[in-house]
Length: 592
Image 1 (cartoon, rainbow, N blue to C red):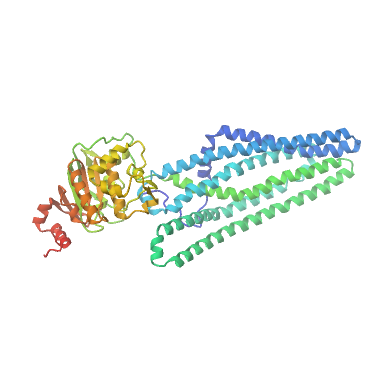
Image 2: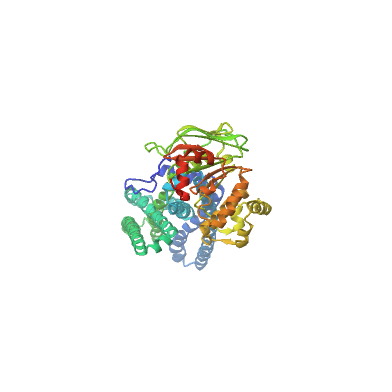
């Protein structure tokens, strides 16, 4: 359903999409031209001041010392101190400006990634581990932060320094400067080879870096199972193997980076030796002064320092563009479930919910999960859906929420196809209570309001009173702290809170998916009584295995193998002696 699902596959031939990544980075920077321009001005100022130092040295060697002029020496020392202080000030302002702009940029990028991820379909989340998604939002964006706040500005600074130094050297002696030119094409070729070889290697490193938190998240989520079956040693072994793979990938990249850097570093003494040799001959011939030679040697450091840093930054650039490449792939995904350009907004269910000859399968080459399913649920009525595990019960309600789309047939609310409805308005009108409950860290009250502070406390108290479960919330006060995933509550207790939450949100249609499956008999009796009262006021779909929770439903639908086998009232289906009757006798232990 999503394009480019294999984002985390270990394809050794996958290369960084520099064009897409550069477009992402440019779009982020283009909205902050002002702050980055100010940082650029600070950088240029600091660079020019730094490049003035060798000229001061030349003045001392060629002018002040031969003339034995103490005032000139004192002036040179004072200018050097002032130059250094100004350099430090502009450098500090540059770093501060970049840190602010970079943090702002990365915050926006994280928000953009999260907002985009929230639009993707459930299939994306079922096929992508949570740990890897967390690595996108945290690790990959942090790598880009280093690129924005250090690497990019340093490269721009170094490029400026290289150009200015080369021009200054050429202005003093063009012939000696041109002797250095053959070195630079060699460096360019080495850089191109390095990027060509290491591009897929850096992608592999970033993928393995995402696998580590992904693996840890999965193992910590299932820590109870691991400990119950004594699988700690096996988990540690798998983690060690994953770390070894990451270590081998990292080392391979670092070896190439080290060889590249050392090769570049070797060219610096070659250039310095050339200046000593050819420049020294010019001094002997009276064509140059010693101060110019000394200035050239100092400028060579300025000339090669950018090249050294660039060789080091190439690794950072590769890592950053690898991260940007992976973020771009996520942002390029488009949900299969989309709204029309001008969708209808569902304000209320006035008439009915209709399934008409609905067929559904999850993939084109898979079998049908639902086959020709049809039923009508009038407003204010209730429908119980029963059947064996995997028979298609939950799929029916998943289609109603448009978590997935169907291939044939129609699903309508008040005669309007749900595919023409706004997803937000559709899901806002339908409440869901699932068997697998997720509660958020906070208080019980926070979870009952689903973190919506605009909901008044009175609505919560009214919902609890309507359901008749005041005793439960005396045992679990509304200000009680809920741990992550509700770890300090039993499954049954979480289901009570989840059901109460659906009442608090006051949605017109309620879907109860095995909502009472893990409750003790006393709590189940309370909830069943509350549901019985709610059936008079709301449109309810109940998915259950336990028939005690569906007796009061207006209609019962038996689903098996994705097909509707029986549809009628509880009494009608019992009298018919079919599949529902068989389920009833099996559950209550009555003879055939």
